[in-house]
Image 1 (cartoon, rainbow, N blue to C red):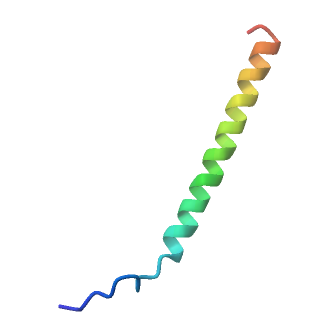
Image 2: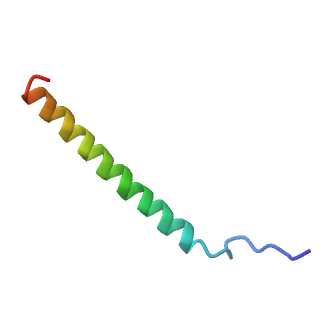
Length: 44
């Protein structure tokens, strides 16, 4: 079995995925807040 060295794993793919998730979550949050404000303004 191979020896594991702490901190030697390449995590660039996981980091890119996480940053993409944060970007999408931020956009969805902003759009949702915008829709709620629009609905409040037009008395939906």
